Length: 291
Image (tube, rainbow, N blue to C red; front, top):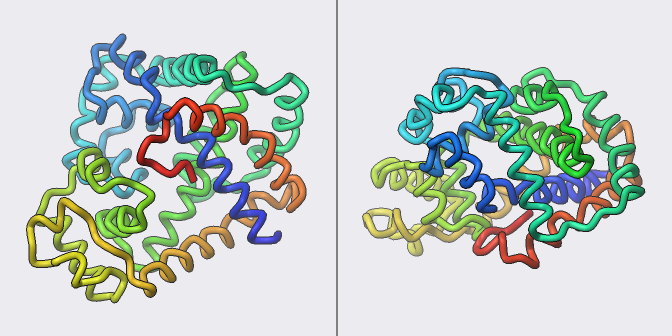
C-alpha cells in the first residue's frame, strides 16, 4: 500500500465521523435519557458498542481522558442500556446528516459500501477494542447511517492503532493531548474542559514535552500557571515527532486497507467527502480541524 493513500483515506474517514461529537442532535438524544452533561453523554455514546463496561474499561480504551473525566460516566447505564444509547447514536447521526443536507445518491452509497465493507470484514481486530466493538454492532436500516457506522469502525481501528504508537513512543495520555493542542488542530480550552486534566497534570505534561525538545519552552512559560491554560507551540522537532508517529500509524493501517488497495482507498475517500463537506458548510467544525 502507498502510505499516502492510507493517510488520505484515514483523514477522510476521521473527518466524516467527527460531526457526531459536535452536532446538537447527540445532546438532544442524551437528554431524552435524562443525561444533560456533555461529558458522560459523549462517553456513553462512544463506548456503548462495548456494552455496560465499568468506567475503567472506557478509560483504557479512550487513552487521553483523565480518570476524573471518565469516572463521571458512572450511572449512564442506569439511565439507559448500551443498546438504547447505540440506537440513540444512530438516530442522532441520521438526524444530523439530514439537517445539514448530506447528499449521497443510492449509487454513491452502494459504491462506498462495496469498498468499505470488505475492509471491515477483513480487518484484524486483535488489540483493537473500540473497532472490534463497533464491528459487532448490527447495522441500522438507514443506508446513510449504516455507511457512517462502517466509517466508525475503521475510524476507531486507526485510533486503536495510534494508541499503540503513542505508547511505544512514551507519549502518555495527557502528553499526547498537550501535543495535539499545540499543533493547533484542537483548541486547548476544549481539550481541557472535556478531558479534565488539572493544572498540575497539564503543566507536568508540558514540562515533559519541553524536556524532549518538542515544545518551545520560551512560548510555553512552563513555570507559569497561565501557560497551562493557553497552550504551547510546537518546535520543529515536535512537528517532526508528530509526523513520525502519524507515519507509524499509517504503517499499522496499511494492512487494513489492503483489501481494496490504493485506488479503492482513494475512491472511498472521495465518495464519503460529501458528509464532511455538508457539516463544514453548516459551521459544525468551528475551531476544530475535521482532519
